[in-house]
Structure formats: structure tokens, C-alpha cells
Image (cartoon, rainbow, N blue to C red):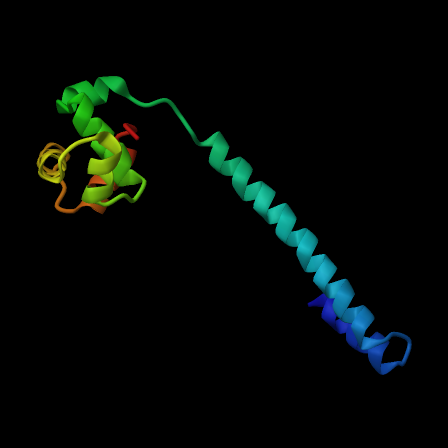
Amino acid sequence: MLLFKLSTYAVVGGNLKIELVIAAVALAFFFIGIYLNKKSLSSKTNNTSEVDTDKIAELGLSKREYEVLQEISRGLSNREIADKLYLSESTVKTHVSNLLLKLNAQRRTQAVKIARQLNIL
């Protein structure tokens, strides 16, 4: 806001052209955006931690069920998961049903949320 106020006074006073003011404000916001983007990316990489394999075993997830859970977390549909893992779609549906039961979830998105809370994704 301070930039806008100063630019208003400069334009009204006749010392600057409006194009220069717009360019200066745009550059300021550009560098602020770069700074915020780098800051948000660095905070995401610092929060990563190891997968809790003991928790996976405790829940009784099979290797295939865990692979299906990983693909669900990437937002893939049953058909896409089946194609990627070389399974039939009905097999993927069975794995999804087993995951929902083992994670005590009602929806796929809820299963992913629970898995992230349990640190298995």
C-alpha cells in the first residue's frame, strides 16, 4: 500500500509517468511472489519424514494394498490404477474396499488423510 501511495503522489506531482509506476509496482510484486514461493517450497521439503513401516504391518496392509493406497493419494481412478499396476479394475476395487476397512475410512479421500496422519504415506 505504501508503494501505491508514493506512486500516486509522484504521478499527481507530475514527476513520473504512470507506466513507470505500474512497472515498479509489478516488479515489486514479482519479487515478493518469488520470495513467497521459495519459502513455501522449502517448508514442504523440511516436513517430509520416513514412512512408518511398522504401522503398515500393524494395520495388516498387503504390498498391493499399499501400492493402491499410494496411487489413490496421487488422485488416480480405479481404472488408472488398474492400468498402472497391471491389475483388473475389480481387483483394484477389492483392494480399495480392504483399505477402507483397515483404515476405518468411508471414502478414498478420508483414507488418504488417515494414512498421512499415521505417517504411512
